[in-house]
Image (cartoon, rainbow, N blue to C red; front, side, top):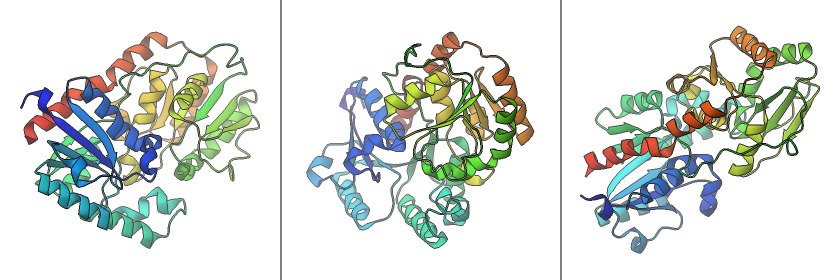
Length: 349
């Protein structure tokens, strides 16, 4: 089928509702790819599960359900999609479809939900996933977990990427005065407190030896338990995507600690991708997707001693990465990933 005739609809069930752009997962999995597809002559739209109607579903060749869960609304929309004859796909970027791993979910570990509530949530995702023969998965490790449950499913690993119109922020001396070496932690949500606490002792030791260094913690992260890590600590409240990238470009090193569990091994290297693409080197815990995106500006720590050494090495001398950052931004752009998605659609047709 010629590309110009294709019509693709993304349906997200994001908790942000009709403001789904503010959901990082929906942004990376739906909006970035829909925008890139549109430049090829494809009609690609993003809608929300709560607002879609039978009329709006008509004429689409492919409908991609972003993180679907088995609710009455999902069942109703699924029936409408099947009646319209579209090819259906699920899209996952987290290990949320296997109740066996509920105990390792940040939702439970960080006390956001009781264990049974997390299991119930994962069970709804499991039931929804059973409704699809095709899926797009953000990482190779996550794809293996999906395939172990549904070995006959047609899977494609489609990594997260930068938006098509990505432009690195341009720091200015007025916007960012020289305040010494700054480490930035930019968790996507407040559910990463235990990840940060995993390296707490390493950070305390580092800041004791580098008293002029600063720590910036951004996003929806409770300050409780973090107060004694560094004397020079500042907190940046949740901000929109562009302001987040600007803040990220202003620090000397970003960090992405992850506890060693199956949930975190499934996670995407999106924090690495964004950091190096704005010119900020990153130090992260090891998982498969981090290794798949390893580059000259990223350091992967296999142990706490690796964290300690890498932090001290980074503080000892800052290197300019503007040229490398531009090359990495192109490597990790949605344009470079788009052929993978196009091939998936072609094979499903």
